[in-house]
Amino acid sequence: MSSYRNSDPRLPIMQGSPPALVPPKMDWDRPPWNRWAFQNVRQFLPTAEVWRGWNGIRILPRDDRDLDGIEVASAHGGATTLAGLLDETYTDGFIVIRNGAIVFERYYNGMEGRTLHLSQSVAKSVTGSAAGALVGKGLLDVNARITDYLPELNDTAYRGATLQHVLDMTSGVRFDETYTDPYSDIGKSDVASGWKPIPPESDPTFRWPRHMFELILGLETLERRHGDLFAYRSIETDVLAFCMERAAGKRLPQIVADEIWGPMGAEENASFTVDAAGYALADGGFNACLRDYARLGLLYLEHGAGIMPASWVEATRNGNHAIFGAPYNTSLPHGAYKNKWWIEDPQSRAIYARGVFGQMIYVNWDYNMVAVKLSSWPDFLNTQFNIVTQAALHTIAGHL
Image (cartoon, rainbow, N blue to C red; front, side, top):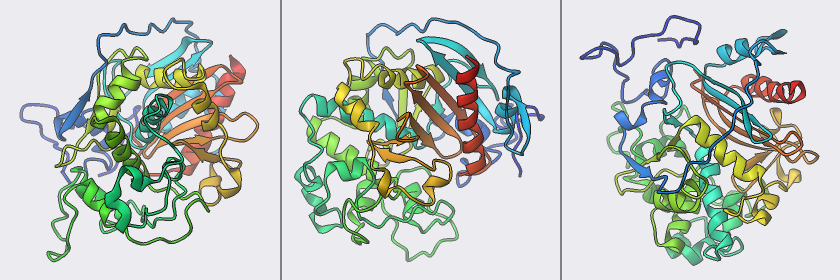
């Protein structure tokens, strides 16, 4: 079954009692099911709450501008309007904050202001932000070895790697990130994390990991020296999160709640999906509302706002561009990766949090701007969608 844009008739997924169209457990994150599922994760996966606490909500003032009609590049060549681009890139929510005020906020596909939306790998940047807060409190040392926190990993390829290596995804550990292969490492993580059942047609003798830590314990192959090259591997964030839990003596949802979500003045509780051992999926299982993702971006724009050290934010903007290559430089030709954020180029040092199927937080200090886009693309990856969305953000900034 194919997907549908916001301008197309909307399929009645999970509508009615009982609903006529129910997402299959193996394909809930695929089209068209993801157009419903990304906004309703708590209805079909176990989750742990990230409480916003008793802190006051950070009020975001408004300076609304009509940006729907501004001309931007189309994903299909030529030009379109911003409204047209948001339609053709399967947008669920989009917000722009400039000079501290909301200038543009739109919801589509049934999403509302309070809706929690799955962030996919934007969760990595959420986890990295909480790590920064722990570093600021002296609970984590980025130069310490992983095995100082997790001695169980002495028998894995993570032996000798530091916390900074996993923060920057520069360990030399082999991890196959082929999303469409159920037997790849990331395919096995779908089962280990509780996102998917064991594929019904799989080899009955194959040993599937029962939870995420068991998956990590099986990573025994070193394919290069630690620190030599950036290579995107989701599991690095889960290794980081287990180190954070050992250092703080708390589970990840509580760490994020105490260090980031409450202090920043979130307006809604968030959530993480959890595996059979209660571990919150740091690499992709975070869910939050659109404006709260924007508040996270504002923490960086405001140099940590006293919640993360300003030195952490500055370090995040200074990645090693020399070890950042193909295929990652197709959409970020001058990019780098640092502390779980993507760096746009060495001049602006603007940063992105990015997730598959079209999730994005953008922070640009030159424009004094934060933008968030939440989507449910038909494909895991779409380089052209990324390129035109990034171009549109610059067009919006120029217009403002």
